[in-house]
Image (tube, rainbow, N blue to C red; front, top):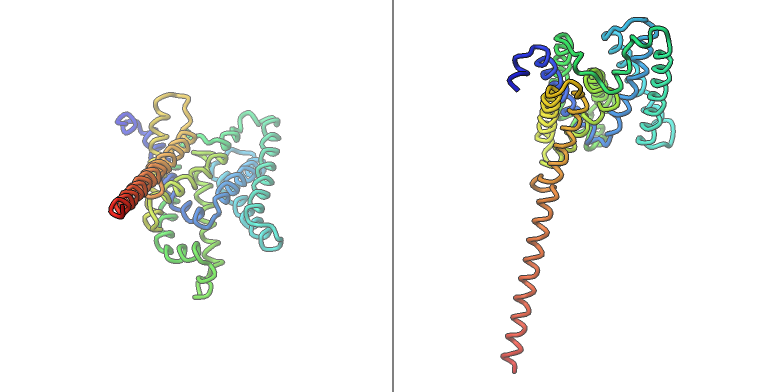
Length: 311
């Protein structure tokens, strides 16, 4: 770990992945509670055609233009998902799957076309599929820091509104909250986080970094504030662990290892969470069985004693 702190490039990657995990965990908590776990997946996959179109239009490999293209595609996917659910009888998960497939398929077609063009081999756009955290530089980390401050600040300021809209949108609308505006703002935060993270994690794995920390945190607490904090902490730990392990060998992908670390935290939560964990449930079930057996044994002894007195 000290080697990372002494290496400026590795330190930037470490900070960038930690900030990405922190902001992803916080904003992903609300997406998970709204039962929109696939939303992050749809938005991440929707970013790919935006990146490809930005390259085709500009003809240059500019990270700024890629981010703009990814954000525009993500917002278009968000609008399309909302339009499908509002104007058809399809459920939200069906609309998410349709939009995800449509945008990702279009992205693969555009990516293949670019790779078969004269400059395709030099474009390097395929790195957006699985991410390339090693290419992060100081300016990328500053961008990630700005996104993290934005996400954390908005979630802290509008925590009550996000909480009420996530659990009971009908009641929130009844007490005068602008539910549509709050939902749109939350979706915008998810889009911004996904776009900021595709360079490090890639469009395929970004959704895992949004949802896995939130699901893990849900196992440890019933309080929303604690859950959001734990989710951000788990995300930051995942980014830290993935970056550290990737420095142990030259060919280890940082983004994929961060996602694996988040999945490992999920496994630990499923097993050892104090109330919902499988170990805790097994112990409670074992104690209950022992108590029932003890009561049955005492009841049988009492019946035998009464029969003995009657005889």
